[in-house]
Length: 263
Image (tube, helix red, strand yellow):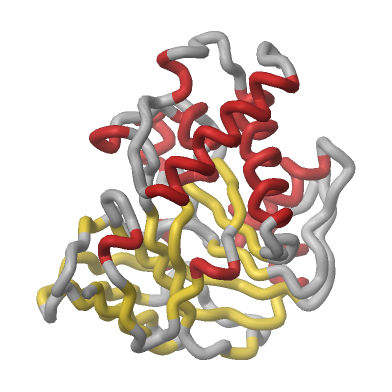
């Protein structure tokens, strides 16, 4: 690590204030170019502590980002990044949310899983993940970078909790062995026009893989993904910008549908 505990706390406060006040800031590495990966996740952990101190329990809410191979190559990394979801960020299926809640919102189609048993690394693999899944859901994530002009680098993104902002879930579907999450079709519509058609394999080849990688990542600090955890496995679609007046509909083969409107 390159940053001091005081610097980490101050940067977490800066990112937190940007989200709360919906005021974009310059990416953190402008001022702290020496910031490393450990620093970035330490800032995220400090941000999570601030959120939980306000009464939000995020201990069972996880998310993955940079889960497409093309995006990983573009950003110069060989594994996805991870963050947490905030309970107050959940938007009801079929509900409405004010676009002004965010700075520059975008939406991504995702598959969410809920675990019936814990997962611990190192060495966690897709087979273990599939044996641990209790439910699967169609999910939509609203991402909202807190950085000016959507201008950031990967370390700043991790510190900003991987741009996590809002999330929508469809009805849970019991996971059964043999359910093909890699080849299920995913269709996202914006105002009735189709903006994305992909398959579950767009998420690193299989949406269970980011869950295994998450278990292995947090094992480095002696943690596990607990039973009951909800994980958004990462964007299967490109992020699509939304504004007031837009409606997004998402359908995933075998998992169901959801919708959300921006006012």
